[in-house]
Length: 639
Image (cartoon, rainbow, N blue to C red; front, top):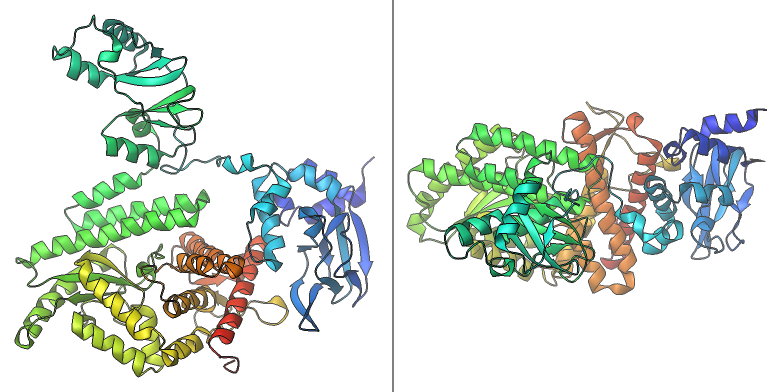
């Protein structure tokens, strides 16, 4: 006999995460055991310090506020509405609740029993990720090992995605390894290779790799007459064998082969030559695998002979980025790879433009990428932000030298625009004479910005302080960087104004957990993720880097990770800031790829419940970091 109540519950919860990741059968199994509770307004679901319940809750109708005692005052720290889950603490630890859960209106709650739910989700990474992020809404570190360990074993973390991605996916190695002993005659080695149609033989002792013979060894060491086919294998084998554990990425394997000029790797149980042989990888294995390789793209960039070629390669880079996002590759790895490809593209354009100039640069110079590219955070097609610094020259030589670099910059900026990097609307590009300066001129410019600081100076500082050399003489950019830290050290007035600027974008959430959206214009009712979320966390990272003299780190996530090292007592908080910066960038990238734009404006109606939850948790971190800025820089009266 059907349980109609359970079916109604299942029909509701299957539409919301994490239940949308479970099978229909599992959802129904859970629904049969759900406890339904009706509560009037201002009633407690549980109170802080209450013993944990045997279930967590989903809101069918109504709204719930989490309240916490802060400085002897009960304050709302989070709110939940239809389809949200809360009360997850018993799922992770047998600890008392730390907040009050109170109804803000009449509410109907579904109580999900832990005894039924937990066994069904212990092998689902997607469900576990969602639960951890939900619980982390009121903790600093969203992916602590303790949380993961409470739901599944560490081994699950190594499970790869069903749809594999080139370069960062594990190599598909050959498991049937043909081996021989070191005293096997070379002619028998050749016969084995012909018989099995293979290009290498692992030489082993007790199934431990002690050497490898390839067809190249036969050509170079036997056919040349250096050794005879009657000699033993140990005369021509290469030893020791380069070994890796299973799971080695294509990128790592390929780089190792290139570095050591070899064509084969051995896979062993622990990744060393002292353990059991379980497979072998050849260059041929990698070549035949599907997908676009960053290594191939990098070679194509370096070999390119025209802007048209680079434009085509740029499209392939975007396909690669889309694959990384689809496969949920960690943003740290994704950013580094895309940055290197973008950087190499700009460098190649500069190289070709110098050739077209018909003469070499008159003095040393450096091409600086600014803003998001300078922070290694430019993933999508966004505006150009760049500048040139050149070596100091005598006064009478200054303008002729500048003219050369302005003409060069004009050519470079034009070609960057042609391949997809739009011109900067504010003209912050190297072709602008204001941003094509000698080293001393740049130092004077930075002196002005940090001593005569108005809104315009703060805006320019926020762009130009995040620079990275793309091409040229690093000594120039190093000197410029040293000068910046020199003039900002203990410059309390400038840091105060920089801090005030970082607070101009208030919390992205309005009343009752609603997103603050654009009120008019082309993007009315859209959410500006750059202005309201990404820039506040970027500004905070820059401010902390300058005030703590953190040198040679421009990336926002890495700046906060360095802060976590400098202030271990606040490590969890700063790591949450690092996570937030990466999560927001990934979110923007994902939506930019989806809509083929820069991802800045988000249509809220298109967001899933899970996406909104993730964003709101990031916003809470932004609010906390802004409170810290107020405290550290005496800005409590600013907002």
